[in-house]
Length: 266
Image 1 (cartoon, helix red, strand yellow):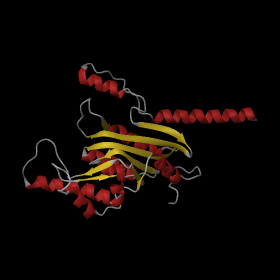
Image 2 (cartoon, one colour; image 1 turned 30 degrees about the horizontal axis):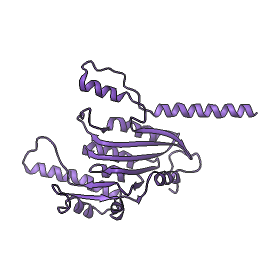
Image 3 (spheres, helix red, strand yellow; image 1 turned 135 degrees about the vertical axis):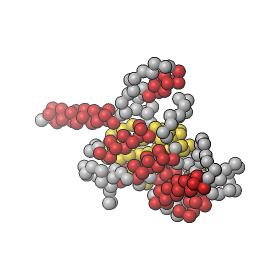
């Protein structure tokens, strides 16, 4: 009987290990014939799971997935190979897989980002906000610009004492037409960000606009920089804390039973 029980445990561990391997993004095997930057980028894509900014681990209450959002959030245009970036085409399938998984019990999102493409960032933030899976975010270093909606998209958010978050108006690169329609487009895009942040945090929409248009803080720009405790005081982030506090919160949101994708207390 003891031997049979040991065999069953080993089979369960093997199945869980197979699942964890399935959560890892597939390696890119296509070789670039042109070489140069394309070849460098291709070699960057043939990486292990920790290099891809994600890892799935078997924690105290089951499997949790850690997703890291770093550098610049890439939009529809590919960034240079030397720029650290988060690609939405990598993150979106991971989020769908986590939400549909019967094994993953929680998601930890760690952020150290300068911001990036607005639509790509909002797309990821909306996906995280709409998940049934328990989610916790942790701002490390910086959660700037479009990183703010990503930080507040989780069901509970943390920020380390030394981390900062920059809130500023919408910017646009490239050709800009000097017509009223351009300003209307800017205002509409800005309101999408304000609406999302105010709905997913304790910051009123009017206060967020004030911080976005502040003129007395940044030397050559509009906006506000909030350090850890300031972000909590403004209601942007829930708590000041580190990895241990974020994980403890995430485990507390995971039900003790085996019911998948249900939040404790809801």
